[in-house]
Image 1: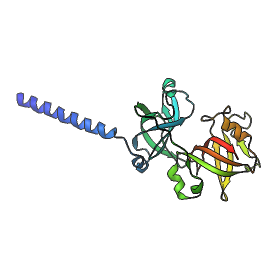
Image 2: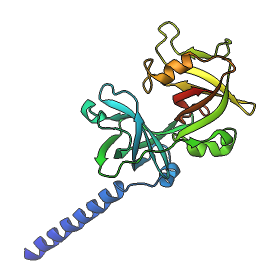
Image 3: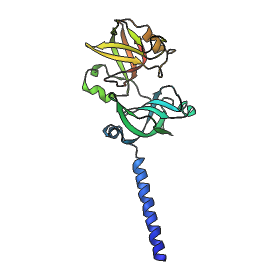
Image 4: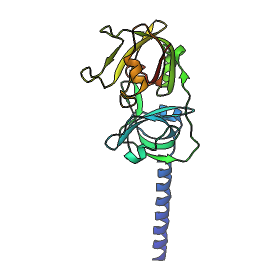
Length: 235
């Protein structure tokens, strides 16, 4: 009887150790390189620093994260409104979710969870990607905070310098096109990141075809580079 009890206790201890090891493996924080190497639908755990976020809505917030080794886009992360207010630039968080991709954009899928991590704040400086816009290297900067300098505004298909996503209300996303070294790129102002009350939104509304501009923003991807502008200066 005692021997049986000892075996049972031993078996339970082994099970507990195995479960603990599995949990530790599941919770292992990935490097950016490991994250990029993961397949779509793989579980991922990352730690990084908030650079910005879109407006909170219905228990969700979309966050732009970056560390020294790379950047992340977390789509509709589960978050209370109170916690969303604490997601200030420089705040470090740990995110647990699933990797996915859509139209070329690599992201952590809707429904991810997070926790705050104590650390010294870190905010990325804009990386100038002007010289690599037309190269394969550009994709290595996906979701980073970047700058494009000396770009020329070119006409939309209808001849205008910019378009509203919703032309009737004129308060939705803005689309504009720029040219660098003979190549054109479609950029935007994402309303939930910078709405119609912001300087960058108003700056794009004031664009004229032929204007030369410097732009900063997050290098989102939609069937190619689709920078989401946070600032724009006409030179």
